[in-house]
Image (tube, rainbow, N blue to C red; front, side):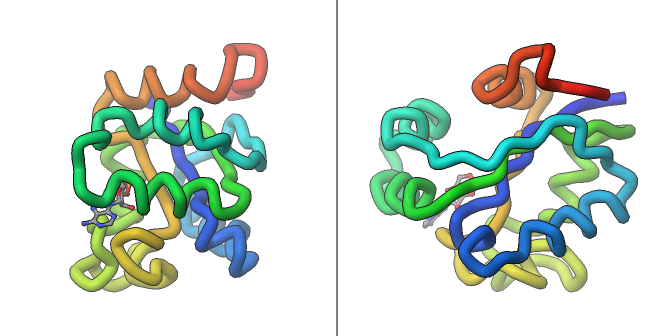
Amino acid sequence: MERTLSIIKPDATARNITGLINSMIEAAGLRIIAQRRIFLTQQQAEEFYAEHKDKSFFSGMIQQMISGPVVVQVLEGEDAIATYRKIMGSTNPAVAEEGTIRKTYALSIGQNSVHGSDSPEAARREISFFFNHTEIVG
Ligand code: CMP
């Protein structure tokens, strides 16, 4: 069993498709074991995405992430990190595989509907960024 952090981004909450996305997550065998709908502050978004701070798209991405509510959630399942990344599809929806969340719902590389941790280290850091152990109910 493994855990990963999922974020449903503002472009998706704005279109009222959090349930549709979570249906795809659950259909893949992942369990949502913690969940909260929040507005990220600019400081939180910058800290969360600190590894990208030198990228050209950083400030646009931060503005995007604070433009509306997000749903942060912990997913649990077998190979949860890889399983979730597979069903999310490529970062750029234009090249994402058919049937993936991003191919189905994302609007662009910047408005790509979902985030998922990319390694066990990232998952640990990202889960503890938003949740303490009493809020994670496996
Ligand atoms: P995410 O998985 O949340 O991790 C970093 C985010 O940066 C990524 O999804 C995209 O939304 C965003 N991103 C990556 N590359 C670009 C780009 N070239 N232009 C705009 N946003 C990008």
